[in-house]
Amino acid sequence: MGTFIGHVYPGLFLISYGLCQAIGVSKAMLFKDSLLDPSYHPRNRRRWARLWKIAYGGLLKMLAGSILIAYEISCIKGGLILMNRELPPRFMYPKEWQHLTMFTLLTLNGCVDVMSKNLLPQRCVVLEKGTSVLTFYVLLLLLMSHVQDSTGIELQIHYLLIVVVFLLMLVLTIQLWTPDTFHLLLIETFLFLIMGSWLIQGGFILYRPVTGYPWQDDDISDTMFITTFFCWHVMINALCLLGIYGISSLWHHCYRPSLELMGSKEAPYHKSAGGPLYKLLREVEQSEKDDQALLLSKSSS
Image 1 (cartoon, rainbow, N blue to C red):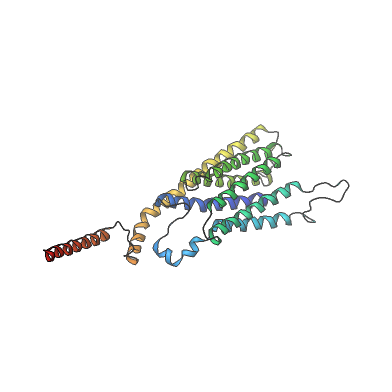
Image 2: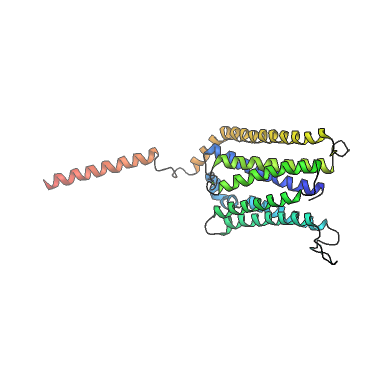
């Protein structure tokens, strides 16, 4: 991960995951739907029910984690070994082993999501959230150790990344008790987007600066602009979330009525028990019962 690609690929994964989650949260907020068990249109419920139930987020985690593991191993010439053969033996590639641990946890997290949503008889949300919390607790510990030999610009970039990871860890921990809360999932999505975009920005700052000249650790202006860029990322990602919600709201107001009309034409008898047709049937049944009771009373008299 100590390369340009090693920062950009995880950043792209986090942004993709955050955007998918932002669309889902916007849909749930507009339709006042459940975040854990969303409902679908009647046409989709019959034809695409199994596809909608697939844990796409878990599959994305597994795919990204596997690719990053393979990339990390391929970057080490001669193979990723744990200790050398000298006396006394010393540990080799400490940062690379930390990266490998992060990516392995990401892959396992995806496996748990897929298993809970698609393989278990009943979905276990606590297991999914618990695995995510464990992943970010370990990630925070690894990042704290990761910056011990960093200085200047690199240290500032990683410190800001640690702040985002710490906030994500807190949000995910709270979600263990309230997993179906819109505000928490919105904050989680926002932090995922910030983490992804900041990783990509860090890759450009450290390895491919736009000016072609490296940033200077002893220049206070460069150090201060790191924090300024981070604040810009916060504002841009907030506007991105607002834009996704706006587009989803526009789609809801423009196309949802026609979809509901199509759904009512396809399944006219699947009305709720509180509809007018149901009430009319109840009134007819009640009147028939009253007539039968009147006839019985007349015959007995």
